[in-house]
Length: 316
Image (cartoon, rainbow, N blue to C red):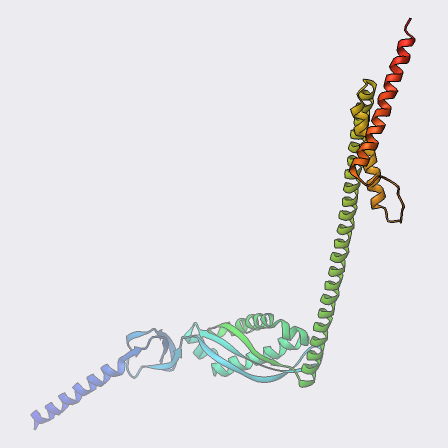
């Protein structure tokens, strides 16, 4: 009997030791922290890994998620500074930094963060005009982040981001904004069109100005060229006259024949090119013209011979 009782006691003792061993072994998963309480009082925080606690004396108080978490902010109505009613919602991103503070400094952490964010959302958005709400969303997010992060720091958490998802003004305000936007776009379009027409008129006037300047320069250049041509023609004619006069003075009748024939032909050309009707009596055959020129040359010869005879008589 004593041997049987001893065996039973040994078995119970072994089972008790095994139970106490497994009761004192705690494994913490990655991304979590466990708080340990001894007789209901916080003593330490267990990091991820294998740990041993004292059974019956120590127990796990709370299992705190240390990863970044998201809390949705439900839609709520906000009255702006200019008395416009808008509906807004958003999200809050936070992370537990101190598991002990997050467990014992605040009750129902998620509800506390949600209510705090909603309250400050109404405060920040209520201090701004509707136009500011719609155009300065980044400033709203930054103000909310500063306020909520500062308020939740004693809770052992870090608010990383607060984002406003939707801001919905009333339907009548949306319609008025659409009309205003359309009017602004029409105004800008009219301004751009007027500016384009003005620029076009300026370019057209500039082009006409350049055309007039170029035309005047062309006329001036043409007049200069004409004057130069007439000057050269006059010089050539004067030189030819001088040469003819010199030849006549030297007793060469061929020069005067050439000069008279040239003027005769030019006169005939002018008569032929004139627009008015005319009646001209002249020899029509080339031999007649040549004969006339020859007769004039003979007259000059006789004139020269006579001048020579007169000169001879006057010689003593």
